[in-house]
Length: 304
Picture (cartoon, rainbow, N blue to C red):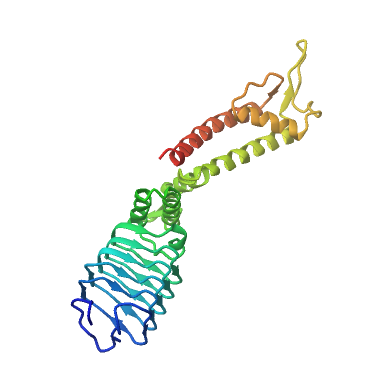
């Protein structure tokens, strides 16, 4: 076992033939509590059964690049003191780094088919793009927030935003619309506010959501004005227009009016009548609120 440092052999462990090159492990691999003092190269290796490195310590660099784990890969409680290279590795079943201490790990181009656990793991630098992890990461709030901080430190801001967005969505999914207090059920306002934050701005990391919602409101109010014929042409020579005497205004006219109200543009030729005056006021307020929200979200994503 040259080059492996302190490494106890377990009954189901198939020993390494050399320090580098492609290897096939046909049985269960068990390196629990092992200490690897020198660099270890297991790149390209294939693990047919469960591979356990639980509570092991890698004092030097270790490479699992292009390795194939056909069963569970267990690294819970493992300490990677130097770089751990798992680039282009394939994990077909569960992989866990729960409670692990990771100085630097590369998971670029890795293929993960099962669940990934990073619960209570501490990592200084984890190089793994969010699309590689997002559909396999076991939900844990602290893990998601730690990953978002990791991406910001790497200046992978898009990955940080995506990670935070999925964290908020997963957190929202775990809440119910009603909470029980004794025999009474009350509205869960936290759930409703989370839903509003999602729809209006994508939790502050999706400015385009604000644009889509603004367009929806402009169309909605235009439809209401058009159906109720609540917008009239400005009277001339002191004459008066009554609601319902506005058949010449088309839907596009009402859409234009709605856009002007929403964006706080001054409209001198048309004005709302009756209850539509209050609708126009509401649209005006919504326009200002969504404009402010858009600027805040856009600033957050563009100014780093």
